[in-house]
Amino acid sequence: MMFRKRRSPVLFPAAALGAAAFARAAFRALRRLDMRGRVVVITGGSRGLGLLLAEEFGRQGARVAIAGRDAGALDRAEQRLRALGIEVHAVACDLGDRAAAEAFVDSTASAFGRIDVLVNNAGVIQVAPMQDLRVEELDEAMRSNYWSAVHTTLRALPHLQKQGRAARIVNVVSIGGRVAVPHLLGYNASKFAMMGFSESLQVELSHGARGPRVTTVIPGPMRTGSIYNAEFGGSQEREFGWFGRLSSIPIATIDARRAARLVVAAAREGRAEVKLGLSSHLLSWAHGIAPQTTVRLMGLVNALLPAPRGGEGTTRGRDLRTSAQGSVLLRLSNEAARRNNEAPPAAAR
Image (cartoon, rainbow, N blue to C red; front, side, top):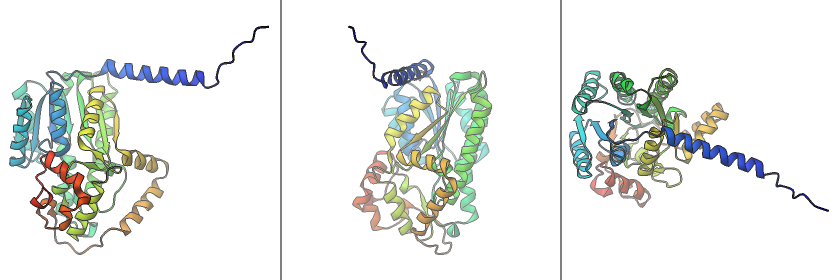
């Protein structure tokens, strides 16, 4: 008598999952953009994630245009990129100003003859209780984080549409554009606006026959070293302390260079969204499942943070004088600041 060998009940599902994964990888490879000779415009490209994105795109053969408000930081970034053999066009300007943003885009198109990829990365972070923020600082957050992206995108769009589906718009938003993190009122509000802008672009461009592909990037806390260019209000030293430590915890944060590689890969593949870091995935999931529970959780976190002091304005992290800057707990952030052109103060070097 012959016995028929029974197959494992998990064999077919496993095979189906494997085939689906293979098909997905093959599809991404087919539409992956070859960066050689492409022109990539990166706002906020003089330091931090923006600079690392410029390096990563450049290593893959792209020509890059970068903009930043700090002329000294921009010059250092330009020299660093040129030393890597990357062709670069650098302009010092405030992209929150419409005329300046449009001039930057126009000068890039004139210098390189085309624009293939736009990365909206420019922005500011103000860390303080809402009672310690002035209207002027909230306005600055909207100008830098939201309007800069609007100005550059609308000006670059005709150039991008010439490239059709091979063009890319990459909007670096934040988990702060999906979950309201305490003591980041202006940042949250501007990033929520940015999220709506990015998804609206997807609706109107990505699903058309000829529109550029739009990628929304949602990072959690990232080890860029940007704590020294963030602005702190209220109990400034205490605000710097909690924010700096949060930005340096390995599990809670993602390494900026790894983040840059993931963003470039997502852009090349034309993916609609990419989350960076464990906290981004967890908080996005929690807010999607139980939004009000997530809000209450953030309220509990807020109760643990420094109390308001009364508006004294904000000070950049590099201009503060606090022992926290040299703390061993900030070691990873300090190392990142040195690597990523964030110009930390002597105490952190």
